[in-house]
Amino acid sequence: MGQDQSVISGKNRPSVNDVYLPISSTRSYEEVASHGFSDVSDNDNTAGKTINQPFVGIWSVHMPEGTTPLPRTGFFSAEDKNSHKCYIGCGINKDNIFLNDVWMLDCTTHLWKLLRTSGSKISPRTGSCAVVYQNHLIIYGGYNSTDYINDMYAIDLNTLVINRLDTKGDVPCGRSSPIFDVIGDQLFLWGGFNGDWPNRLYILDLKTLNWTAYAQNITGRAAVPHIVYNDNIYIFGGSKSSGMMIINTKKKLCEVIQTGGPQPTSITTCSGMILAGQYVLYIGGKSENSYNLIYCFDLNRNMWFVFYIMPDEETVTKSDGRVTENGLFMIPRIHSFVSYYDEEKKIVYTFLGFPSTDPSPFYMLKIGDALGVLNHRSDMLDTLYRASC
Image 1 (tube, helix red, strand yellow):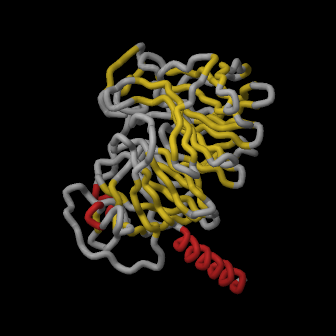
Image 2 (tube, rainbow, N blue to C red):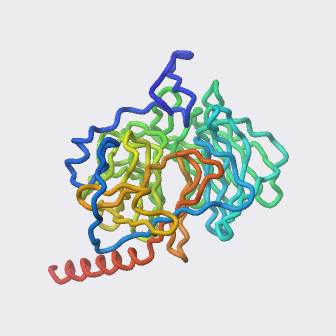
Image 3 (cartoon, rainbow, N blue to C red):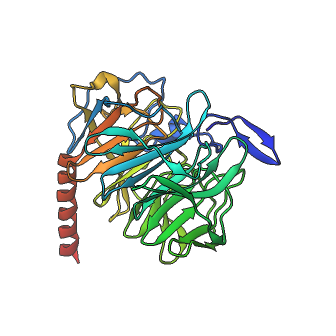
């Protein structure tokens, strides 16, 4: 992803770096610092002492074992919570070579496996997306170095046979890096980039493979993270406007709600959102700054706050991050990564993406103790609210 553009067939073609969409400038340091908690400039050599916080997550870094995927960005990823596996594939490597391999990560052993697929061939691409549905990995679209594409494939995860899906109805046009997720037997697609910013909401009935399109009033976004909560899709980033975007899947409506508290920079792309109970952790994203705080969004109160973290002092130390003048520890910035949450162990894992290293390490954030404090605080606030009614 980059700011250099040339014109092909009357459309903007982003430079060959990442996920194939343009990026606007980020807010200035003065703008984000006015919130009191946001990222500091790369030129800020602040390295003070951390202050005691009411809760902290513990950050650590661990190297994988065995064979691993090539470092890349612009890849698809999908998690199968039932089998505790993650799938990644395609993307573009540091030499601007487009890839079409598919890998599985066992989230219990943290071992990678290259999937030896057969059947239809998926062309090398970047900016594609995927979901797991009824033991099939469904892959859509992307950019193949010349065109934005809208083809769709299903990999049977038992046999590893790939079949191209022939859909009908209001078939969406090709695009890179849209919102793409499944709820029940419906697949939701919104946004992305294809030289334009498409904004119609598309819903695919996975029983009939029929698409239906719904017009929206919100400008499209691309390469932004999302989570699903109570059958709604929550999206943040990729916009100059603040607020949390929600796709109401029952009303088939995209809307933006205003939120409180110190929030991340709203224009950031290629970041990650991880759902843990009623909380959403917001990590990383593209920026001129090399370090960042982790933010958290309370879905029940529509409030942002800083999620405090500290290094484990074994695999990483304070010298591996940055301490702000307010005493808050920041981790090195990552973007275009995969993340998943181990609900039993209360650990967030992120891997692949940028910075590109071979092999790609696992970044771990233990949040169990912090969630205990946050849940207790939430219960107290609920009690106070009921008492005041």
